[in-house]
Amino acid sequence: MLKSILVASDLSSRSKPAVQRAVQLAEGSGAALCVLHVVEDDLLEDRMRHEIRSAEDYLTDQVAGFGKPPACDVAVAMGHAFHVIGE
Image 1 (cartoon, rainbow, N blue to C red):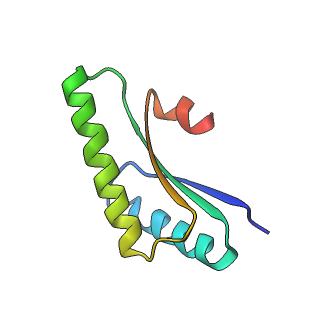
Image 2: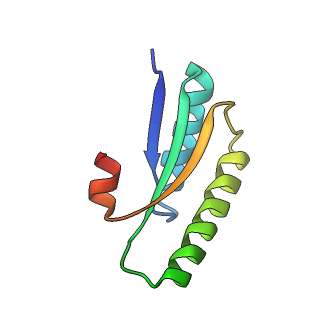
């Protein structure tokens, strides 16, 4: 039985089916869902804040469009995607 699901999105159209499937799995199993996007940390501070807000808004809307499960978090982290997702 699934307890939690992590799905990473690069905000591309290729990530959309993965997010949709993760939402379906979470709804069907009652698992907690975390949708994660990583913003590279080499941006200027103002640009980074803008990217984070935009990604949070985009993913929140995307998940809601698929029927947001009760236990769902949208997280946007800074760093290198390879390392952040692994952590």
